[in-house]
Image (cartoon, rainbow, N blue to C red; front, side, top):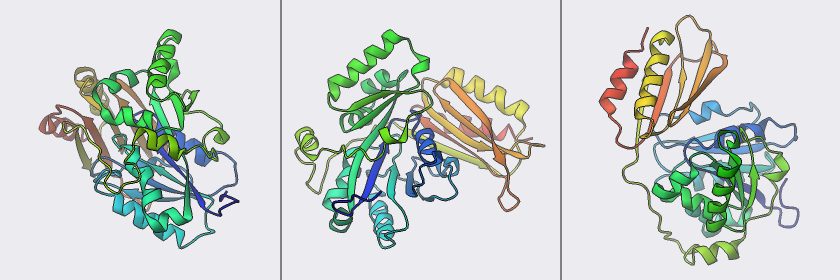
Length: 324
């Protein structure tokens, strides 16, 4: 799917605040029978990577960048990964970059214009932002990253529409329009959308972006993060007891949910042959068996909490107490 006029590799930047549904959208893109092959770059906020193991598609190449935000400390890694991919031109039809939920998409998009090698061989197709219909209004109040993700979007998936009323939906759409009147908005549930409404959009408009951010093409883009945001990750090579874990995580999220913006994990329960994937956004929890553990992989439970005012010692003690 290279740009037929310029022969450049199209790049889609997939962004959205914590828990909005980015990885679900990515998996839908990779799972559709489109016959295309993508290189995928996944960035996570946290020392222990989980999203990489949640991305489907054995035919795709997934590059994981952890322990730093793609718009800050690991941006150099992004350039090096893409530069390496470009040396193998012909192996894939496009590049998808999934940012952390705390990333400002502007410096990520900027990479494709200010880096000479990357800019010469790639074309930024669109910034696609997934927005949580239930929580976006709150995040626009307290998270500058969420506002920037909306402002820089070419396509917005207003996701989880089943969790709010029609009146609330119209209200959040008005909030989005007040920030970005130009983006194409699609209402979705579980990030369910046709691939041709997300990829191959040719939607990135440099003139619009420079109108928002006159310094966009300058090397030193200024961006700000919520300095109160914390991320704690824990792991255990001992199986967990589901009769201990589920009551603990339910009580924890009911009590601390307003502070826990995002929780997720891949868990190994005793006497269970399957990997259990756990997802949480504030007090809303979801989980399911993903697939059987392979013989060649360690049955390692990993869990990540992202939020504010988190008690690291209490979280770790609670997790450790769930060991069977």
